[in-house]
Length: 305
Image (cartoon, helix red, strand yellow):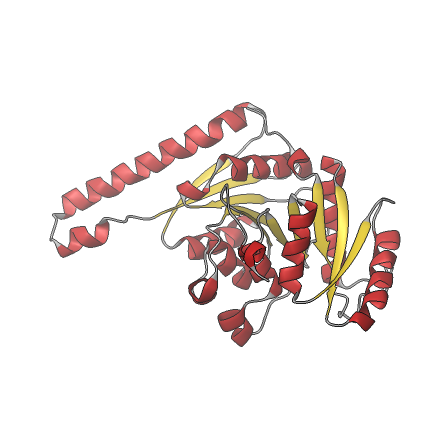
């Protein structure tokens, strides 16, 4: 079964931080914005997508300057003449998500900017909040991105998060870039703690682990073999342990450029303090991260005044 391709991304929203002193014109962009533009152009070329740049400002007086900056970026940095621009006033993550809902965006591409410890722990960066609250997939692009060709694509998470959409997007990206595609399933043993507490014999615990590993391999092959049969080679891996730690380790070992995974879309204080695999990767990994929301996810921004 060949991947559907990147045609699902027909409308791409690209937030640009116009407060960044390096963003003065399309010919003089910060490294992070150059990487963001490269990824947006690359995906749009593959999917024949429209691109909208958005800047969020804090006052009415800043809107005209922000629009001029965006128009300069649209004209000078992109290899297309149809890039649209939008300027909104308010809280950045709220306005970005609202624009994505209005536009019915299929993908939000954001530049990577690591927050400080206090912001990361208690508040969360704009990218983190957009990732949590947007309804469409969100890709946070690493500033280290230089070339979109020959990327190492990694699909990673627990089996229940390796949805057909996650795998299809991953396979399409790998096929488009001509790079490698790896799928890593982080295997945990939910019953092993109770088995220890109730003094279940070691032989039974070992049998349980073996059966879980076999089940995981069988499910991985059932998900990925049809895609490989369609012409996209894939390497399958099992890792044991906490998903966020094992995925970060796989990123380093495989030299991944982009991780694609599902997210449960946590929000609120619990999400800010704990986070899921995608959020933890944003704080630790040096690669780009593309997070896909579960089907039917409704953004809380829809209900905010």
